[in-house]
Amino acid sequence: MTETHETATPPRTVTVQIVNAFIRDGAGGNPAGVVLDADDLGEAEMQAIATSAGLSETAFVSQSQTETFKLDFFTPNRRIAHCGHATIGTFSVLAALGRVQEGWSSKETVDGPRAIRITEGAAFMEQTAPRYSDEADWSQAGVTRADVLDALGLDEGDLTGSTPPSVVDTGVRFLLVGLRDVATLRDLQPDMAGIDRISERLDLIGVYVFVPLEGEADATTRMFAPRYGIAEEAATGMAAGPLGCLLHDRFGYAKDRLLIEQGALMIPPSASLLDIRLTRPDGEITGLMVGGHGHVKDERVVRY
Image (cartoon, rainbow, N blue to C red; front, side, top):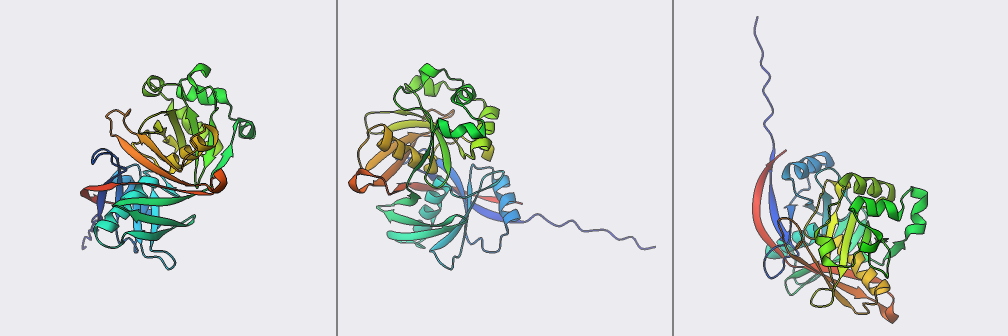
């Protein structure tokens, strides 16, 4: 009798570019994965690669019939419609390779096309005009301000006195919570399970906690997104856009450009700077671009 032996299928590999996006003074930033020429990868394969890469988001770049490139974004545990720092990282790589030039280009996503602009070495991505959802709108989803305070380990007196927490959507949804001082933001001990429950009920990417500032930056921030497998990250372009709108509309920051810092209060810190450009004819926001600089840090061969 002849014995047969099954041959194990060897693991497949792919090269992932590691790009720090929204760097500040040439350092810091938030690392994203970028996989170029991903046309032959299916959704399950992209998810497996993103999980193996272990970064907060990985972008997969393929050809598009309608836009400059198609981008698919995955966190370690699921697909996400848009990702700010992975977009900035991707177009920084494409610019360095000469695949895009200074000026306008675009990305195709599962949520439709978005404009991209490369200017003076920085990449900017389009977001939509803001939509607000306040506490009165949350009751049907079973979320109260007390739930938010409990999840963040805060008291009512820790909040900014002028503007309560609000959900803001410029393409994806974040809960924005303003605090009275930087020390309170630095010392946060968030309950990830509580944030996860709130995020599920309100269909959020995560919770973006901030302190308004006066100086080079208009706010300093921290972001928690356990629903997407992200405990905390150093730069969140899709959250900075909503915050820029909130600062303009409800905090009186009546200007076209705002700067948001993030990552400086993480452990370990990784300081990032996010640049928001508002389109606001007659003082009303009709659109915005969020951008910054990226730097290719490394590349990694990932098995999946």
